[in-house]
Structure formats: C-alpha cells, structure tokens
Amino acid sequence: MFARRDPPSGAGSIRPDKDGFLWLDQATFRQSFGQDLGETEALVMAVAQKPIAGRCFEDKSGPPAWKVKPSWYQVSSRDNMIPPETEQWMAERIKAKKTITLDASHASLASHAPEIVALIEEAVASLA
Image 1 (cartoon, one colour):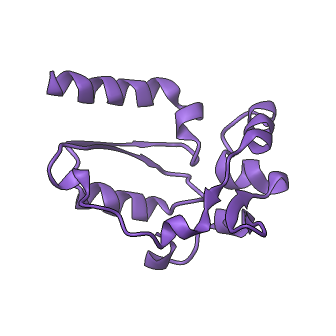
Image 2 (cartoon, helix red, strand yellow):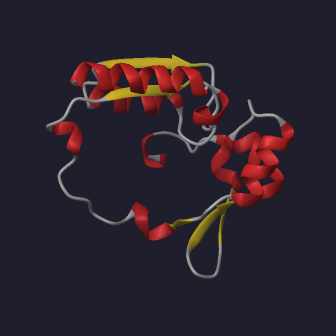
C-alpha cells in the first residue's frame, strides 16, 4: 500500500523487532494511528497493540473475496497509516456497493463506532 504514493506520516512510527514483527512506537502511536482518540484510549491501545509479521506484506493470498462478493468500504479522511487517496482507490477497485468517508484516523472503529456499526448493519441487511 505504501508503494502507491509517498509513505504516509504514520509510516515513520513503524518499528521492526528482532523477529521481524512490526510495532508502532508507543511515543507516537496516537499521532500516527489514532489522533482522534482520547489520550487514555490511545495509550491503552498503544500498550496493548499486537504486532504484524513483516512478511505478511510479501505473502501471496488466494483469490480476493471482493471479486465475487459484495463489499462496503469506509475511508478515513485523516488516516496517517494508509493514505486516504489509497483507501478511496481501493473502494473504487472493489466496486463497493457503498463507500462512506469519515473525518477519522486509522482507528475509525474506535473513534467512530456508531457510523461503522451502521455501515455494517446496512451491509448485513442488504444481504438478508
């Protein structure tokens, strides 16, 4: 995702460990990942974060589900981890049935939970 554009500002907070796992620096976690979270909530997320294996970005996956299943998408307009333009491109690529844009950070699930739940419920209802 970083190869499509200049790396987002949050990319500078990514720290690999000796085992190849990627962590977000706790000191810059809030600014990079969840600037719209309260200080306490961001601190809890920073301390409790789980890493991602760096090799995941190189692994090949099977056929993408979005090619055969309907999709919905949420763009975070203030995302410092994935550029919002890249998110919009992904929504267009998957031909999302509905795309919403929130004035949100990468942590939109925490900072805009009601809007995310509404989008999920709309998706579920349309498939029932």
